[in-house]
Image 1 (tube, rainbow, N blue to C red):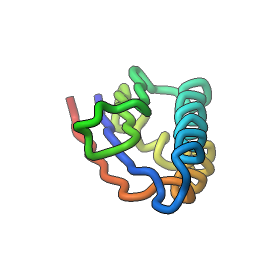
Image 2 (cartoon, one colour; image 1 turned 45 degrees about the horizontal axis):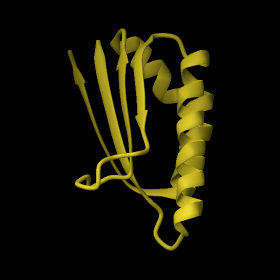
Image 3 (cartoon, rainbow, N blue to C red; image 1 turned 90 degrees about the vertical axis):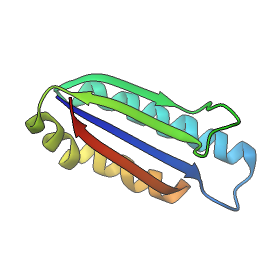
Length: 99
């Protein structure tokens, strides 16, 4: 199994309302991936972190295999979502590891 964790911040210069709307849209699009990409065992998207957090949005996903994770990374739906997320979020950090 492969654990995939991604964290992002809001894009600077946008209003709090715009940031919230964008985060909700990114969350919805991420959650929709579970319907179209096989091999996802767990998929949690956080857009309401505690005030002590350094990031505004987090994804914590578990894939059934290296192959499932590799297919996810190049899936057209993810690539479209990543393009949108890059336009409204910044400071992406991620870690992937085997469980």
